[in-house]
Length: 295
Ligand code: NAD
Image (cartoon, rainbow, N blue to C red; front, side, top):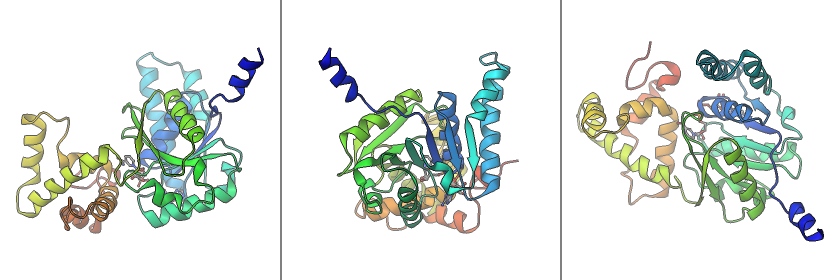
C-alpha cells in the first residue's frame, strides 16, 4: 500500500490550468485545443484585435462541430467560456503551464520569457512554441531552465496531430513528462526530440523552402512550382501556398534562424523572395496578401 502511495506521489504532474502568450495563428489554435480538451486557458496578447480574432476562430471551429452534429450549443458555450482572453500580464498568475507563442523573434521571445518567469509561480512549467530557435538559447533568459522546454505545435493546431517536445540541456525529466502528458491530453502525438535550430520537422522543411526561394530568385514562376509540387509531385500544397499559410513574416524569421544555425547547409540569401514580401507587408493569409491574394 505504502509503495502505491509513493508511486502516486511521483506521478506525472497534471496540467489543470494553462496560459498561452500570443493569440495569433498558433496561440489562438493552442488555446482552442486546450479548452476543447478540457484544460481551461488564459489567452494573452498585447493587441485586442488579436484576442478578438482568436476567439472568433475558436467559435468558427466549434460552430462547424455543432453544424455537423458532433457537439451541442451548451458544450460549445462551455468550451468558449473556458478561454479567458486578456491583455493583462497578471492574468497568468497561478497557471500550471505557460505556452509562449509570440513572434518568432529571438529577442522578443527572450524578453517575454524572462518577464513571465517573474509573474508565474515557481512551480509553473514554461514552454515555447518556437518553430526554429534553439531551446538552450531561449533557456538563457530564464533563472530556472529546468522547468522549460519546447512544445512545438503545427498549423492548423486543431487538425495537425504532431507536437515536438524539445528537451533542452537543462530541462528536467519531470518537465518533459508533464508536457508530454499535456500534449497527449490535448489529443496530440508527442515526440521528444533533442535541441538544435529547427528541431526535426523544420530542419527538413526550411532547406526545402530555401531551395524554392532560390528558384524564384532565378526567375522561375512560383505558381508553376506550386502546381508541380502539388499536382504532379503529390504534396498537399506547394511551397508558395504553404508559406502564405505559415505567415511570410514568420517564415522570414525562421529562415534567418536556420541560416544562422546551419551556415554550410542553407544558402546565405535563403530568405530572398520571402524577405522581399515581408518588407512589402505581404504577410500571407493572415493579412490577405502574400504570394497570392486572398479575398
Ligand atoms: P502570429 O503573427 O499569427 O501571432 C503572433 C501574436 O503574438 C500576435 O497576435 C502578436 O500580437 C502577439 N504578441 C507579440 N508580442 C507579444 C507579447 N509580448 N505578449 C503577448 N503577445 C504578443 O504568429 P504565429 O504564426 O501564431 O506564430 C507564433 C509562434 O508560433 C512563433 O514562434 C512561430 O514560429 C510559431 N509557429 C508558427 C507556425 C505557423 O505555421 N504559423 C507553426 C508552428 C509554430
